[in-house]
Length: 219
Figure (cartoon, rainbow, N blue to C red):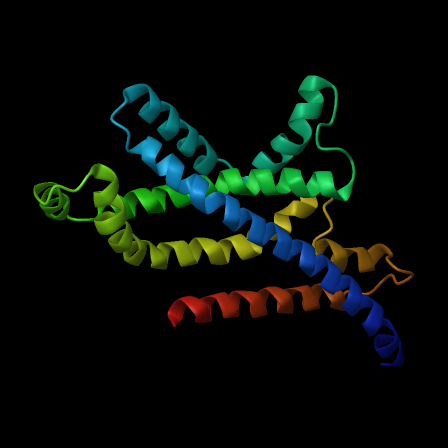
């Protein structure tokens, strides 16, 4: 018990630092993936066949392959091809590569949710807007968008909860997020080694964060 009390301040501080990195990935991914997902959804509904085909193929590949694999390819791939790591070896470079991989991945998932929400709006309402003389952009923003938001909240909330947990995948390229920190105390970190309880504490971080997100979408 004495050892636990002595170690707890250092462990708690380290876990908090790791969790801040986790939150950074989460926030940056949402800020990038939501607008990009909407843009991709337009491509997947385009009547221009080449754009439609390219978009659908890209979304199919990204959704059909593991995020971990995409993260490894995006971080290590340019270095192998160009013989130079464009991201750099520091923490900032790892964070940028991680966010790029997460944004691309989640934008493709969000695009399908956006597409379903847009196409789920009854055609009659679009025709009514045309009768009223509204332009295509006015029909989208004044009629389709508001109804789409109501339709996409449940599936979007599920993806956001998944994103919270997927942030732990950043550790595969050595990025120091909260689970990476917890694991380091097994082998040695900040002069502490051979303890497993920090890993259980990382679970508490995720449980608390996911529950807060679930409560938000239930309200």
